[in-house]
Each structure stands twice: as structure tokens, then as C-alpha cells.
Amino acid sequence: MNVAIVTVGDELLAGRTTNTNATWLSEQLTERGVSVERVTTVPDRVGDIARVVNEYRAEYDAVLVTGGLGPTHDDVTMEGVAAALGRSLEEHADALAWLEANGYSRAELTNGTADVPAGARPLHNEIGVAPGAVLEGVYVFPGVPSEMKAMFESVADEFSGTPTYRTVIVAEEPESALLDRIDAVRERFEVTVGSYPGESVRLALEGTDEETVSAAAAWLRDRVELAE
Image 1 (spheres, rainbow, N blue to C red):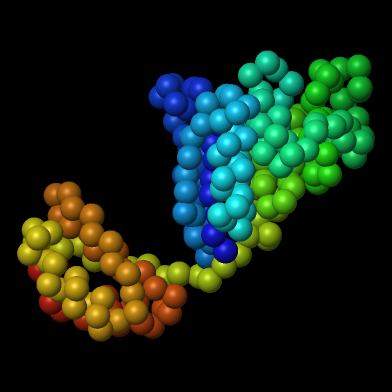
Image 2: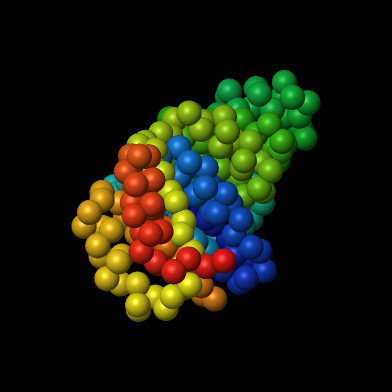
């Protein structure tokens, strides 16, 4: 399973808010064996949201969109997703009933609070108010981290893939000097190798077979100068 993550918000693009949602979602999905192939941030503009969601839903098994939910003027994510899917926005009776059952009277709710794209399955917001939605492989979550996390957990079982195993070796050698052994371990074992230089060089070995990753790591440890 491969997915794309789209985070929505002018505050993210301006650097005034740290994009913790993308990091958290990527971690959760990777742990489930799902390949995260795109993380994109777009402004609070219907056209930008619609364009990116429409492009990604054609390329990936699922698109996760977070941020910009609610009834205020700059909460336009639902509108953008609806446009990408060629749907209208409609008040969802089940979403409204759930809100009323959880203490929100219709009179208290701002117009548009329970609007989702026509035909979508609403995702109830256990912590906040604005519901999320699922339609045609597009999952829409709130931007508030606690709300997003709780809502993702309610559908987490819908995301699964092939588990990967990862081992990190820290080498006390220049990255350029390690190239021959990186090539060799890749040729001998079915693993990928990521090289991340800093004060030392972190070599991350990944693969779908745990024993193969362990064997590759043991082979490489014997052939590099390890950092203390």
C-alpha cells in the first residue's frame, strides 16, 4: 500500500506552526508497512487543495489530508476535497446526529460544521467538533494534532502493507570511503541502504525479511570502523 499525505495551512507554509502531523502520520503508516511516497503542504486555497488531491488520488492507494476543517472562513479543506472528487458539499445527517448526541444542539453549531462531500463516510471527532470524512481513498482529518491522532486511530486498521525491518550502523569513517562496502552489502543481500553523514555516518539497512537485514548488518559491522 502506498499513500500520500497532504497537510493544509498557511501557518505551516509561513513556518509559524511546525508540521508535526505529517511526521506523526508518516511514523504510524511506516510502522504498519505502508509506503509514504509524498508529503506535501498546500495553502488554505480550494484550488490548490483540489489540484493536489486530484493528482495524488490517481497515483496512490490513499491520500491523507489534514488541516483546515471547521466552519470558519479559512477552513476550506472539505470544499477542496469535494472539488477534487467532483462532489457537492452536503450536511451529513449521521454526523449531525452524532454531534447532537454528544452535547451539541443544532442551534449551537455554526452552519457548515457537519458538511462533507456528498457520498462520503463521516469520521466522528471524539475530541473536537468538526467531523472528518472518507471517500474514494481520500481521508480527511482535522489539523489539531490531538483530534487528528484520535481520528486516525479510528481508521488505522484500513492501512496495512508489508512490514519492513531496519537496523542502523554508525560508522566512524568518511561517507566517501564507505561507498565500496555500501555497494557490496547491497549486492550480497536484498536490502536498501541509506547513508546519513554528520559527526559520524549512519548507515540504515532496510528490508522485508528480518533475518536478511540482521545478516546484512552483521556482515557490514565486520567491515567498517564502528563509532564508539
